[in-house]
Length: 172
Image (cartoon, rainbow, N blue to C red; front, side, top):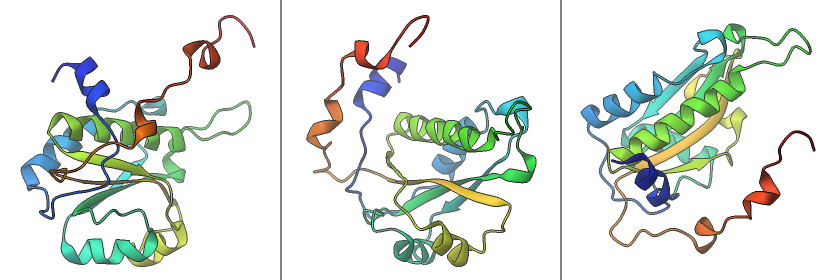
């Protein structure tokens, strides 16, 4: 798909067909995310793929924003493998995880798979449900699947602030 068309047509899908994604589609989406840039190429991302009824049942108590999706990917980052900025100790791994999530989302769109980026989840409940170790931080949940026939974007999706409000040159 042409990139401009892909980013223009993508929206947060909140209504899905019930079928799980084929492994070949998951592999294609993950292969794209594997190419995402990370700080000093440390690759601290850890992606938990949930593509069974059992896994999705464990997810539902962790977030009300599962939208009954048949598949999800929880993008996490390993804080012990993160590049660290020397000036203030800031870790690149949370940003790395978000970049990986963006690659997953766009790769899914390219494959005809709808996604919704969810931050509204209980990280403690996620740790419990999926035995996530302490050094692995849940960062973003991407619920996904084939969009339902009547799936549509919410009205505010196509509302953009004027670019002059979000972009500055030279200094603030």
